[in-house]
Amino acid sequence: MSAKLEISTERTPADLRSWARSCGNGRAAARAYAIANALEGMTRAEAARLAGMERQALRDAVIRYNAEGVAGLFDRPKGHRREWLTQAEQAILADTVYRGPRPEINGVCTWTCEALAIWISERFGKTIHPDSVGRLLRRMGLSRQKARSVHPKKDPKAQEHFQKRGLRNALKTAAEAHPGKQIRLFFQDEARIGQKGRLCHRWWTKGQRPPGMCDQRFDWTYLFAAADPVSGEAFALVLPTVSIKVMNVFLADFSKTLGEHEHALMVLDGAGWHRGGSLTVPDNITLIRQPPYAPECNPVERIWLFLRERLLSLQVWPDQETIIQACCNAWNALASEPGRIQSLCLQPWVKKVIS
Image (cartoon, rainbow, N blue to C red; front, side):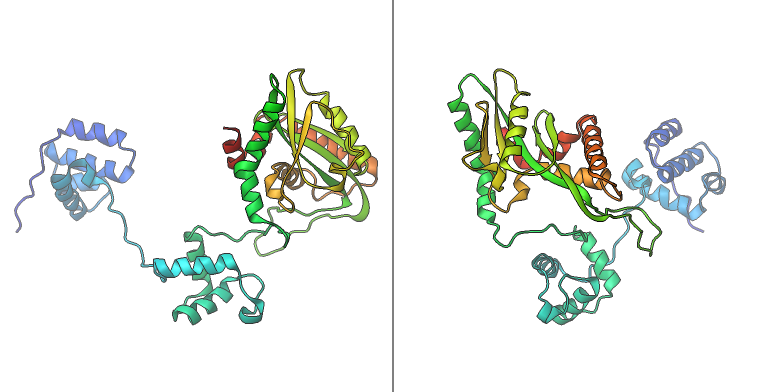
């Protein structure tokens, strides 16, 4: 028969119970209570029974407690199955996922788990089930998302320059041109809202595609907006069309919202109604154009996505008056939510520009 295992007396039973109440871990607390009972003279079998464990489990806890103190009462981290692919192979896989497949070679226009399982087998000589490929991709920090359209003429270098230096230099130039004025940064854009309806994500029974009401007619209107990502203030008008004449109306009404000592630097795209000899720009506004084909440089795009996903999808509007009212209701709901415009528009690159 083995000798009785001695228990460390570094802590008293009262100390152990006090630690158990504050440790925040039920299993570690149960071991501490069992050891405290044993220290007070209770039989090991009874102490283990009251803690809901086997006597051998209590013995293991005592050994770890003697060696490590109360830190030894917590569960050991469990081992994990070794990854199917090495770190180097995962890096190659991630690069392949980002570059996308070649339809003439891989047989698909976008990667699926089944197609990637075939690619992994051909590239690394390893057989992985498609379900395991999906779990591996998620562990690598990837998720399957709806792609954003990118124009083939987009210039990534021009976009990077605008976000890093171009806009900062424009703010500096505006401040020098208007001394004594507070320069405020606004982003401006417009969205077409109408009967050509839109679907969005919604919760539904797993394995079934949810239905969504979507109009197919062609009556619409336009929502013009300018937002200050720093303060969260924004201005919007619902207008019937897009043209230089309509843009003049928007700029004139927007300029009236600025204070006497404020000057707005307004970022907007290169649409035809944003430029031209007949465009009238008020004295308290300076226009700066974002790089072509780069909607990522305009945070107002995120406002449109938010409104469409939350308030302007899965609906049928009978006429333009109803569309206009829906636009007004959606914008007012957005404007009344504290901090929402800031959370949508104050992107990390904008913070760097204004810092």
